[in-house]
Length: 415
Image (tube, rainbow, N blue to C red; front, side):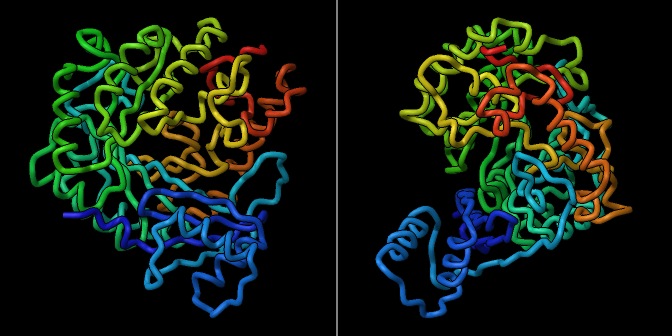
């Protein structure tokens, strides 16, 4: 059975700078200026264009970057006028990613769980899930990250994933791997773009973080591999495990079937408060050097990424650049992404559950995205980099944004 993500329509969405082209088949995300957007739109509409040499080369490049099929559906979206504030950094007219916690239930009670999930946690109802998926689909959200809690415990998880496809949204899902029956693996293969599992260390050291052992993680990866499901390892880095990066990288390199590895900054949220210390408590140069070495070792064989909270460690690295600064991405909260709780609270990200922007039972996502609370959070992003002396003179300020505006997670070498 093949995944159906390649059957989902391409998304073309207008923005102030031009627009975006998103391919659900492999999560290709392209930002286009007005001229490029018009050309791509006309080409995808099969309007019988007469192209000059330069335009033909551009279209060839586009076709190489997406799963192109002349018969494939295309979803054209115009979100309309948005928020009134002007920023030096990019704020999209609507989210491109929604991180939806469909449940707070999980049986592991991990000590660092930022969602404080528990065995008696609450599931979002199917009516509420349908409301969320309908709203984000209409508003042009490209991807949804399904999380929790443990999302596979939701009694209607197959229906949730099927609904995503019906709404033209590609779902990605994070799991602890405890409930991967053969039936569930077939469901994930059919509907999901990628499956993420967490790995904070190797061997016996993993027990500090998770109640499942290292053998379980390895077994989970092999299960997903046996069903040819794209698998991403998420590595959350704190002051307690960043020094073990070499071991973590070595394990990932010994698992060449992985789709990718993503490094995340530890956030002291939920039960994670007091569990460990953020990377900001360590020497910034050593943290950046460790990340640089990890990126270089992995990038020849595996896709490598990082969450936006690690941007300062990358922006301020004084050695040879290990991530193209052209693609440096600082905090995406309220700029291109939002979080949604099981109660349908919309929040800047799932690590800030108390910063409620609105609730989808009372307001549409468009109203919330363009509302005053979201605007105030964007103002925080602006103030965050402006109030830091080093940031104020850095030419990467509007890309890095100075790190998380709420929590001190990682430092820049220049501070």
